[in-house]
Length: 139
Image (tube, rainbow, N blue to C red; front, side, top):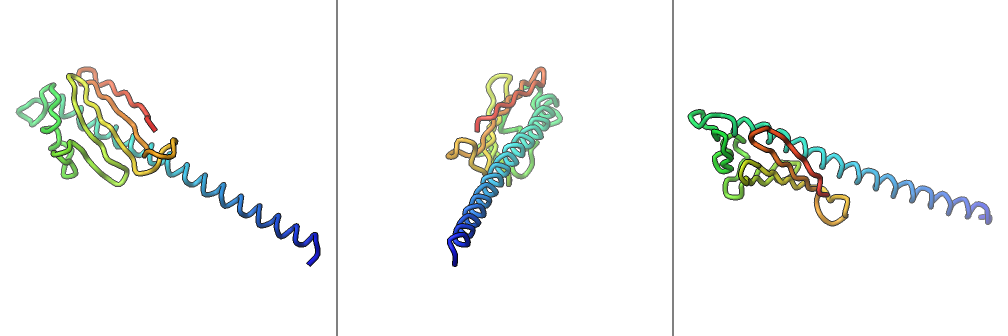
């Protein structure tokens, strides 16, 4: 082979290698973004159910305007783990806690986040009286 042919072969291998690396990086970033959006979506669904629990009277099984995380688990269905106050699904794990009039949901995803070491995580805080939702993306 001539010098030019070897140079073209090496250049072709470098270009293909770079293309594969860029493609894998884009795929990984997209999976992280999808997982982040999925846990936020799940937490918004949980917030809707929790808000219904909070506003329902006690004789209907609701919270009667008080957060009781253990009792609220019945409203979430069969996936609720009362021992850990959590729900797990394909998108991640969600842990519930209450402090006064604020319900906090910490969602931890299944994909590695932007920092490269910890999984995707977001926190949702739902205020009972006004139904205000504040979501904070951690990773």
